[in-house]
Image 1 (cartoon, rainbow, N blue to C red):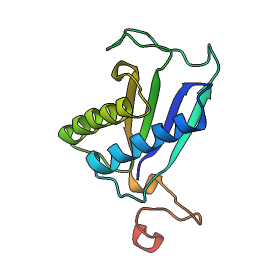
Image 2 (cartoon, helix red, strand yellow; image 1 turned 90 degrees about the horizontal axis):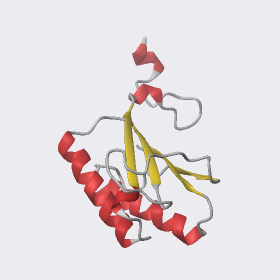
Image 3 (spheres, rainbow, N blue to C red; image 1 turned 120 degrees about the vertical axis):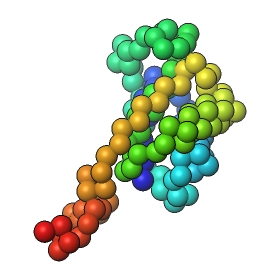
Image 4 (cartoon, rainbow, N blue to C red; image 1 turned 45 degrees about the vertical axis):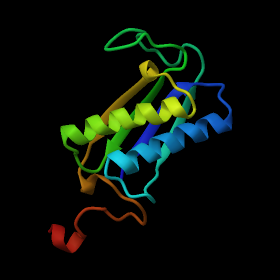
Length: 132
C-alpha cells in the first residue's frame, strides 16, 4: 500500500505525467510486492526555484528533468527487493516517458499499518476491540 509523492518541474503535458505514473506503478507491482489495484500517487509540479536539488550529489549529473519519488510504504522490504525496484523503476522511466536514469531519485519511508486509515475513520491496523 505505498503512497507516492512525485515532484518535478512544472510544464509537462498530461501524457508525460501518465507515463510517469504507469512506469512507477508497473515497477511497484513487478518488483516491490504491491497489488495491481493499489495505486495512490500525487504529483507536485514546481516552478523554477521551488524544486532545489544538487546536480551531482550521490549521482548525476542531474538535469531539469529531475524527478523525485517519495514513497511511503506500509511495511518494509528487504534490501534485495528495494534494489530490484530501483533498477526496474529506472528502466521503466527510461523507456517511457524517457527520463534519464541520472534524473531519478527515490526516497522510501516505512510506516506501520496503524499509521494508515483508508476510509471511514478506521485504522488499517488491528480493529479497536483487539487493540485494547
